[in-house]
Each structure stands twice: as C-alpha cells, then as structure tokens.
Amino acid sequence: MKLLVTGGCGFIGTNFIRLMLGKHPDWSIVNLDKLTYAGNRLNLADLERDEPRYRFIQGDIGDRELIMDLLADDAVDAVVNFAAESHVDRSIDDPSPFLTTNVLGAQNLFECARQRRVGRFVHISTDEVYGTLGPDGRFTEATPLAPNSPYSASKAGADLMARAYFETYGFPVIVTRCSNNYGPYQFPEKLIPLMYLAATADRPLPVYGDGLNVRDWIYVDDHCLGVELALLKGREGQAYNFGGDAEETNLAVVKTLLAILDKPESLITFVGDRPGHDRRYAMDYSLAARDLGFAPSLDFATGLSRTIDWYTANAKWLEQVQSGEYQRFMESWYEARS
Ligand code: NAD
Ligand code: DAU
Image 1: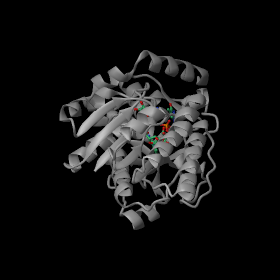
Image 2: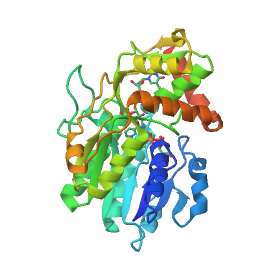
Image 3: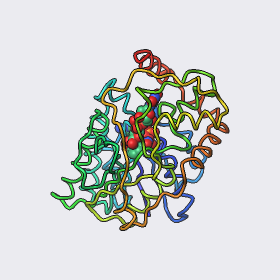
C-alpha cells in the first residue's frame, strides 16, 4: 500500500506513521506536513533514513498544484488526512486559520484525490462535531452535528463536504470521529501534557470552570489502529465513531496526574471557563466494533502512566517544541483567564 498521510508531524499523525511502518513492511508513506507550530519534523527524523518507505514533504494541503503532483500517476493508493488546526482555545482566539485548513484545505484534498481517482480516502474528524451531551447518553453516528466552537464547526464543515463528495461524485471517503487522544508526542497546549509541564515545574495547574467537564479518553495507538481498520475495511461514505470507554472529569484527570507525579493537589487553580465549553463527550462506537472489529485496548490508568513515563524520558522533546510562538499564545490566553 502506498499512502499519502497529511499532518504526519503532529501528535496523532506521528504515532500513526510509526505504528503503520512498524506493522506493514510492504507499505510506504509520503508524509505531507506544513510544519505549523504544532508540527515537528524531528518526531520522525529517524525514519528519513528509510527512504523510499518513508518520505517527508513540507507543504500545505491547500496547495492544489502540489497535491495534484503528489497524487499523479497512481503514486498513491490511499490518502489519510490528519492535517488540521486542532486546538479549541486557539480557534476561539482566531478562527480564520481553522477555516482555511480544516475546511478549504480538506476540500482541496478531496477535489485533487477525486480528479486523480485515488481509490480510498480516510478523513480524520472528531467527536466534537456532535456538540455537547447532558449527564446521560452517548453520541452515535446518527446524532445530528451541532458544533459549538470555531474548531468543531470547521471540522463539521469538512465532514459535510466529505458526505457531499460521496453522494455527488461517489468519492470513496470514510470519516472517522474519535474522542480525546492522549499519549507520546502530544503538543503541550492540550490538557495532559500542559498539566504535566506545570506540575513538574511546581506551577499552578489551570483548570477551566468547575473542572467537571467530561472527556472520553483514548490512548493514541488505539485511535491509530481504528484508523487502520477504517482504511482497510471501512464502508465508503460511512462515518465511524471511536471512543476509549474512559469518561473522566478534567478534575479527576488532573488529580490522577498529580498523584502519579507525587505532587500536591494544592497546585490546582480554577480559572475562567473556556467560552462555549462543551460539558460532556461520550462515544458509542458499536458500529465500528461491528463493521471493523474496533475496540480500545488500554485502560486510562495504564495509558496515563505510560504517557507520563514517555514525557519524563523525553524532556528534551518537550523543551524543543516550546517555541517563542508557543510562549506568546500561552501567556496571552492564560493571562486573560486568571
Ligand atoms: P496536531 O495539532 O498535533 O497536528 C496537526 C498537524 O497538521 C501538524 O503537524 C501541523 O503542522 C499539520 N498541519 C496543519 N495545517 C496544515 C496544512 N494546512 N497543511 C499541511 N499540514 C498541516 O493535531 P492532532 O492532535 O495530531 O490531530 C490530528 C487530527 O486528528 C486532526 O484532524 C484533529 O482534528 C483530529 N482529532 C484529534 C483528536 C485529539 O484528541 N488530538 C481527537 C479526535 C480527532
Ligand atoms: O474530543 C476530541 C478533541 O479533543 C479533538 O478534536 C481536539 O483536536 C483536541 O484538542 C481535544 O479537544 P479538547 O478541547 O477536549 O482538548 P483540550 O486538551 O484542549 O481540553 C481537554 C479538557 O480540559 C477540556 O474540557 C478543557 C479542559 N482544559 C484544557 C486546558 C488546555 C482545562 O481545564 N485547562 C486547560 O488549560
């Protein structure tokens, strides 16, 4: 299988490429990534010695000429699109790049892949397109899309475009919607690595609102295995939910993390809430279980300990990714909430 993976220098893309090249000796992957603040080429630098099995290209999914070139002459059997602006808080600060990449960039990829007659396209979406839940129930694929943040609205926009491409052109697209991932290489703007950094530096841990918002956590490898299943077995035109069966309040996550690191709960600081903050996500993934054989394998306590061990062993990576741009956003965002 010859794959074009986009956004492979980000958190999930990095884990996906490592896992797939490890599992499938006969696969080759071209990784196209723009290298935004969230993309780090060094994540996969060791694989660059393995050309032609792995090749990195810096570029934008919105660049029509580049994508048409990459997909020319049956160069690619399938596309897996991870590339996105992915942080909800940044989308509140400035929605524009979210529309450019997550909607227009995705549509450009669909269009180029359609024109080049690519046989399969997996588009990575998110549980956030469904909006928010009350205390009971889970999202199914039949739940109406009701996004509440500029990020989730942009992801929902691409999901609807994927649907339209399937219905209108018979475009062979499969959409995956997963819950909150955690694990190695996650950028430290997201809850778990951000709190790890604060706790290990004995700085306050900024919990939004009352800390009782619930997320359904899944270890990143379990998500990546779901994407592989969707690629190999998914029904064209179908969206599949993936979840981790691990609903936790943010406060519980932060307390568990502090306990593992042997740090005091007095570091927890409640700060102003995220505007439009979804209260609860939970995924019903029975369709993916039935159609694809998907099931998450790692429980949250084991996955969190494994993740913390990775961050502890990779302090240099964490230091490297905290660029000037990262510092600027963090300072202005958290200053406004204190
Ligand atoms: P990330 O922010 O860590 O990585 C995104 C990557 O995309 C980066 O390497 C970045 O450089 C690249 N990129 C951004 N704009 C690009 C463009 N225009 N052209 C090419 N590359 C570009 O994100 P992530 O957490 O790895 O998420 C990957 C995908 O999975 C996203 O589509 C996200 O919506 C989805 N998702 C994430 C989660 C989660 O919990 N992290 C859960 C469900 C779905
Ligand atoms: O659900 C899937 C989504 O999960 C993905 O589509 C997104 O790309 C990914 O970023 C993630 O979105 P969340 O908004 O759920 O993740 P985040 O890590 O930003 O926040 C998790 C929860 O923790 C959320 O309820 C907000 C809260 N939080 C977050 C930060 C950064 C805090 O309380 N304090 C913080 O400083």
